[in-house]
Image (tube, rainbow, N blue to C red):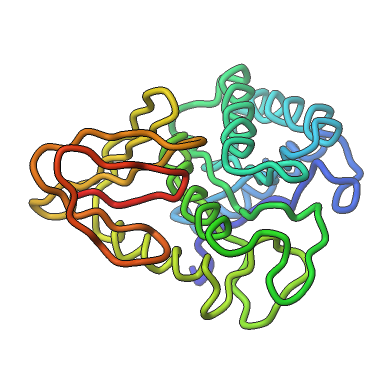
Length: 265
């Protein structure tokens, strides 16, 4: 009872980690599920995670694995994906990977009881970084970090686990998350806005995305654009706070929104 979640395997789509077949992995997942539930029925069984950033990895393994899980009655509580965008892809490329994953799960008739998680998230990991910042820096790093969580809600995933928190510079992650880094500032500020709140929905109009939340008796939104800038109408005077860089300002009538997420309300 000291372990809450059991994952069958890491990145079954990569020959670096797994060389078996999709059917073999489904069988191992089924065995894991049976053993876990015998000893702790409250524990969560997570599928082997699938990478989505390269079609040559994803397509030969992930959809066949989903079909094999279906044939065994979906012996999991969660299906896990890793949605690193390929090469220099940003947040919109991640959204496309998530949508592909969800579409293939729908084809495999995944039941509603089975959740969808992102169990390892970052950006640009296929491009080698250099200390002290890595390949994604400054405002862009803050934007990518915030978008990771906003797009997780937006696309209907239930969880996203950021990889990784480290006090030191790391070669692997494209976005560094150390004390004082822009992404860390964005992480903490986004958390201060959303922890304890209830996510309602995200709406998209052209390039403008607005995600609505409720915290106690107050409602607020977090807005951003998929590219460029957009004008957002607001009623009355609203406090506008960027997820990174600068404090809150009051705005009346309309708000100019960019790719950097802002809290409005």
